[in-house]
Image 1: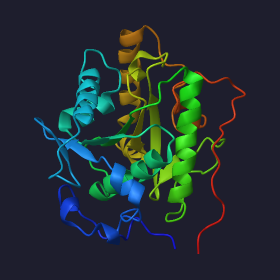
Image 2: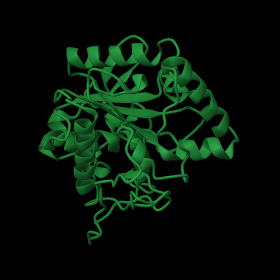
Image 3: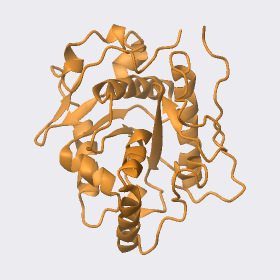
Image 4: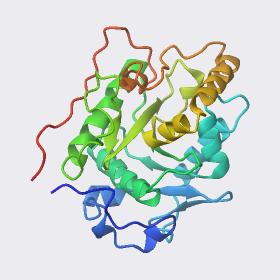
Length: 280
């Protein structure tokens, strides 16, 4: 039976710690998801585990976060949305087992459901969820791209047991209206890894960033999207010397082409497919 993300009991911020997850998180009793859950926040001083504040924070999680924070808030970093989220501390993150492993798939799904519950609506703050992975060692952009789509496909297989695809976007990755969906809400995905050709996407840990698609629609409605896009392109030119050739606006081409960060050819075919069998 599918859940309706718009009619689940809601709580915001730290209230998720004290709420009964069995009522809203379909993976609350999943052994792998619970064991490898890593849903964390930064309060300006320390990293805390929001779902288990009494558990000591993994030192590697702290290091991975600190490296990312230094990168995002460093000079000329292009993405103003990421900078805003880090300045406002309106981001959540976690460190998971190897990218595309079953444990990572289930734990990231679990924590994304926490993220969607904590942020049930979009306001004027840019919010984002960052999943970092302990491995594997990335050999090339193609290697990372394969792992990214394997992870997203496996996450969809889990998610489709409980949630329908967000009907505000297309579920066909060839469509210009495609956006990834989890928990019934569409997401724009950004891949980062050690072999990325774009400097803004280069980092030591394989990383997947999930941004609520609704944020970009809100910016368009407020007349701010084009200004933000031009600012990012100017900053990227200063950062790397050129504009990312893969970046287009939603509706101009499938955003699936942008997820991994690799400059894919014109005849590239996305390996992702949606499950058509709706659970009873």
